[in-house]
Amino acid sequence: MRNLHLPGRSPVFASNAMVATSHPLAASEALDVLRSGGNAADAAIAGAVLLGVCEPQMCGIGGDCFALVKPAGSNEVHALNGSGAAPAGFSADSLRANNISKIEPGNIASVTLPGAIAGFCELSEKFGKVGIDRALAPTIAHFERGVPVAPRVAQDWQPVDEHLRGAARSQYLKKDRPYEIGDVFALPEQADVLRRIAKDGHAGFYTGVVADDMVATLQKNGGTHTHEDFANTRATWDSPVSGQYRGTDLVEHPPNGQGATAILLAQILAEFDIGGLDPNGAERLHLEIEATKLAYDARNRIIADPDYTTRVQHMLDPETAKKLAGLIDLKRAMGPVAQLSESVHKDTVLITVVDRDGMAVSLIYSIFATFGSGLSSDKFGILFHNRGSGFNLIPGHPNEAGPNKRPMHTIIPAMTRNNGAIDMTFGVMGGQYQATGHAHMLSNMIDFGMDVQSAIDAPRVFPETYGLRIEDNLEASVVAKLAELGHEPTLRQEPIGGAQAIQIDHARGILIGGSDPRKDGLAIGY
Image 1 (cartoon, rainbow, N blue to C red):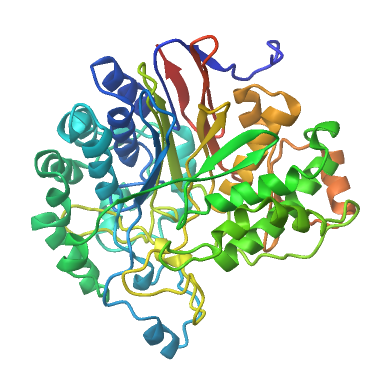
Image 2 (image 1 turned 45 degrees about the vertical axis):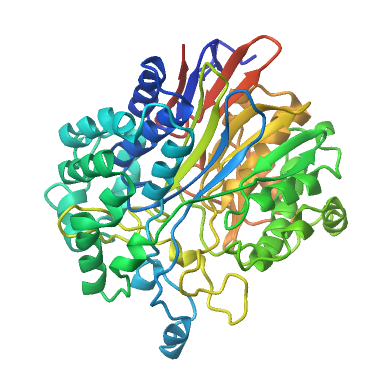
C-alpha cells in the first residue's frame, strides 16, 4: 500500500465493470456505454475514437490499431490487426534509386493505409453488442462541440507547429499557434466522417466522398495511394503469442506487432534473481537495459509483416532467452546492440475495458509520430499516420518496405494469464519502449509484489541510440551508478511512455485498475 501521507494514486476497485485510459472524458464515456447496455468491445471503440479529439497528437481515424479480445465466458484470446499496408504502387527500388536509405517521417512514402477504422468496424461486427452506430454516438457529439485541452496534451502540442502542413495547419493549430491548456478543440468535419461510418460501416470511410478526399490529398502530395487501396483495406484476426515469466503467461499481439519482443525480454530477465535487488536500483535497471538491447536486436532481425516473418518461434523459445542472458555482464554495459528504428515517443493511446460479463479488451491506437505525418486530408482534416517509417530499405530483409505490405509496429496490447484464466489486461505506450515497459511492469508486480498502480508509477529507463534515457524521478545515486556501469544517462523533458491496466481478481470477484500519472487519464469503474 502506498504512503497515504504523500501525493499519489491508489488502485481503483470495482465489482461490475472498469475502463482505464489516458483521458478522463474517454474513460467516462466508455463507462457510460457499459452502463447503457454495451459490452467491452463497444466501450473500447467509443473511448478509443473519442481519444482522437481528446488527444489528437496521439491518435486519429487516419491511424492504425491493434487489440486483444477475451470474450465473455471464455479464456481464449483473439488478436485483431487493424494496421494498414503500403499502397500497391509503392516501390522501394524507386526510393533507393533516389539515394533514400531510410523512410523519414515526413516522406509521403511513410504514409501507409489507415487501418484503424477497419479494425473498429471488424471489432464491432465480431464482438460488439450495440452496433457501431451506438458506439460512436457520444463520440460524434464531442467531435462536433469540442473538448478542452488537458495539461499533458497541451505540453505535447507545443513543439510541433512546424511539422503540420497544408490543411493540417488550419485543423490542428489555433491562429497558427498550438492549442493551450483549456482551449476547446473540435473536429466538426470529422464528426461528419464518423456519422458516415455509423451509417455505412467500413464503406463510409474507405469508399465514397471520404475516400475521395484522402486519395486526392495523398496523390497531390506525391503518394501512389488509390481508391482500390482504400477499398481493399481490411482488419484481420489471428492468434496471440505467449510465453511465461515465473509461471505467469504473458499474452501478446503477434507480428507485425513487436509483442514477441516483450516475451523474449521477460524470459531473459527470468534467468536472474530480480526479486533480490532494489526495484529502482542500478543493478536491477542495468539488467533490464542489457536485456532490452539483446531482445530488440532480435526484433529488428525478425519482426515484420506476418506473411514475411519466419523466425518468431525462435524469439519465443526459452532456450533463446537463456543463451542471450549468458551474454549479459553484470558489471559492465555492452555497446548499443540494436539500431532502433525510432526514438521513444508519446504518440499512442491505449484503452482497456472489462465488462460485467467478463469480456476483456486491450486496444491500442496510434498515428505513429506526433500528429502523424503532419499531413491531413483537405476536406475532412483526416490526419494521416506515418507508420511506413517502421519499414527499412534493406533488400531481402523481412521488414523491407514493399507494396501491400504492413510495416513492423511498436504498438502492442497485452494480457496475462494464470491457472488458465486471463487475470490482467494492460498496455504500456511509448513507441520503442513498449516491449520493455511490459516486462518492467510485469516484473514490478511479480518480483516485488507491487500493486498495479505502484507498478505503473515506478521510475523508467530506456536505452536509445544516443544514450540511456532516464526519468527525473530516479535517485541521483542510481543515475551515477548506471554511469559507472558504462551507461550514458540523459534526461529528456517528457516522461517515458504511459500505462493502463485492469486486474481481474477471480477469487474475490472484483476488478483493480491503474492509470499512468504521466498522462491525464484514470481508471474508473462501477
